[in-house]
Image 1 (cartoon, rainbow, N blue to C red):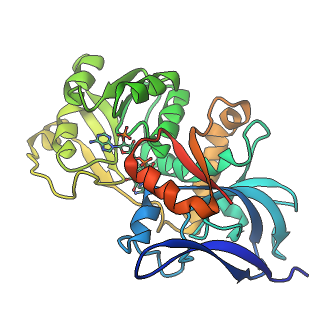
Image 2: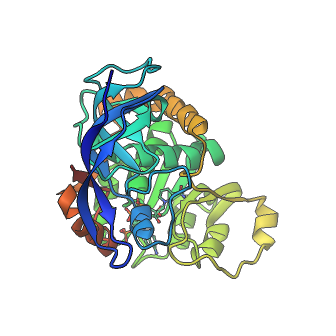
Length: 329
Ligand SMILES: NC(=O)c1ccc[n+]([C@@H]2O[C@H](COP(=O)([O-])OP(=O)(O)OC[C@H]3O[C@@H](n4cnc5c(N)ncnc54)[C@H](OP(=O)(O)O)[C@@H]3O)[C@@H](O)[C@H]2O)c1
C-alpha cells in the first residue's frame, strides 16, 4: 500500500503575496489518481492573478499555484488502469503544479513522447487544451480556412499556430516586436504581424485578399473586439480567452449581423474533468502523431527553480518571453 509522503510546494503569503517553499504531507493517491514526481511545471498568466487574489481557485481545486506539470509516475491509486510506475506523463492539474509532487486523475494526463524532453512537456497541457477547446471544438477551424491568432508569442499562441498549420489552415499571428515575429515565422506562421507597428486589420484584409479571417483566437479584448468584427470573414468565429485590453468595448453590431459572426468566450479551468479528459483524447487522436514525430512541440523560453517562482512570475509580467516559462522543481 502507498503511504502519504512529504513534498515541497509553493505557498503565497496572504498579506505580502510573497512566495515561499514549504513542506507538507501529500496524501497517498486514491482511486484513479496518480502521484507524479514533478520534473517541470508551466507558468500561466492566471497564476499571477491568483497570487494577487484576483482569480480565486475553484472550490474543489488545490489552492497551490500551478495548472500544468510533467514528470514521472511514482505511485498509483487502486483503480488506475492506464499508467505504470515510471511512466513519463504530462497533465493538466487542478492547482498544485508549483510543487515537487502532485496527485491527479489518470485521465487528465497524456504520455510524453520520447522525442520531447520531460521538463519541456510541462509546457504542453494548458496550451494544447486551450487551443483545442477554442480553435477546434468551439470555433471549428477547417483546413481550408485562415486563423488569426492574437498573442502568437504566448505559450498558448505558440502551440495554437502549430496545431492550425498541421490541420491544414493558413495562419496569421501577432506579436510585439520584429524578433518575436521572426520566431513566429520560424514556427511556420504564414503572416506574422508586429502589433506595435502594423495595423492588423489592414494586414489581415490584405493577406486574405479581402475575405477576412475565418477564426480569430483572441486574448486581448477591449478595443480589439470591434477590430476583429471588421477583419472577420463571413460566418467568422471569434473565440476569446482573456481581455488584457479590458472587458468593455464600444461595439457596432451591424457587421456581426451582416457577416453572421459568432462571438464566444470561455475559460478552461472550470470545465469538468470528464470534458478535459475527452478533449485530451481528441488531441491524442488528432495530434498524437505530430507530438511523437516532433512536428508539434512546446516552445520553451526559460527555466527557473521552484525557489525562483517569484522571479519567474516577474519575468512573465515583463512580457519579454516567447512561449512557455517553466519551473524545474
Ligand atoms: N480562458 C482560458 O481558458 C485561458 C486559458 C489559458 C490562458 N488564458 C489567458 O490567455 C492569455 C495568454 O496566456 P499565457 O499564459 O500564454 O500568457 P503570456 O505567455 O504572458 O501571453 C500573453 C500574450 O498576450 C500578448 N499581447 C498582450 N497585449 C497584446 C496586444 N495589444 N496585441 C496583441 N497581443 C498582445 C502578448 O504578446 P507579446 O508578448 O508579443 O507582446 C503575449 O503573447 C492570458 O491572458 C491568460 O490569462 C485564458
